[in-house]
Image (cartoon, rainbow, N blue to C red; front, top):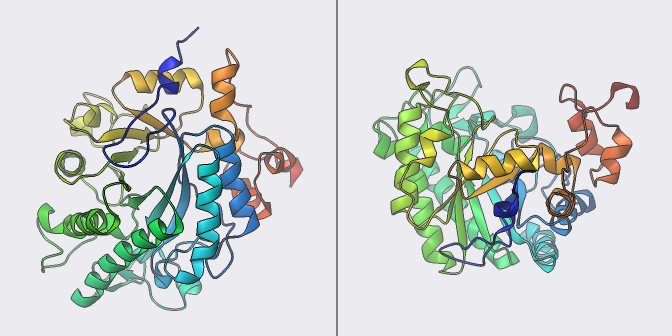
Length: 364
């Protein structure tokens, strides 16, 4: 039997409260908030149920920091003080269950659907494929400032911290991409310029939110014209020099080799675990389902793991993994009724039905 004790060891951060274990709820799109971005009962219930289930840190879905940064219907908002009542209630409920409460801050950029935001989406540069227009220099500064304001709003609501979403081809990832970002000003060109907006956001959040506030960043190392050596370099710089408390590497599959043939002598995971990290904590997400596999990934040099689909299937995955020897998640597909019992509202159940093989077709 695999020793799972490392999964349940406490973990401190350089700032803010300690985690009671090494298990984070991954930020998961769920389409459950109201059209104006305010908190719904379904969104509240889904998240609080995971805190009740034993996750050491409960992270929200991507919460957009500007109205035009919305990436999908039913997305949680954090761009207005109108969102504060729901956010405040959520933070208190997560923390009441001895789970750290974190908001992920997001802007979809060119991936904001025109029909959702009512205008052309924005991007570091004009993008024909997505019908996106380039941000002006003033708009880039406003975008930066709106990420900072959203972090302050999260602190006001009582959250323990925030995660900056710099992954998956959304706007900050678009700045990082040498293919997407064709700017010639201080926000484009060399890597130092393409990372500038994230670095400036982080510096201001730390200054304005204080020493007891947890600050994390999510990066992904592939797709969207990203270059693995650049993301590896930036990950190392973030962990050592920019006062972040955790780095969340979203790998899609923690066991996969790099897509780039030049770097396949080791796994994608191993390109990041060997980086010096100082006091920063490094975690990964991507198809981690079984407790034994989670423990194996931890043993390979990360400090914590993030669970997505496993947490959808079992709100109490941490508690069951600790209490039940040999616990394994339920096999797919599952029924809509099963997902309802696990705390997913109708919109979330419909969304998961679009994932191939996740929901039994005869339960539609």
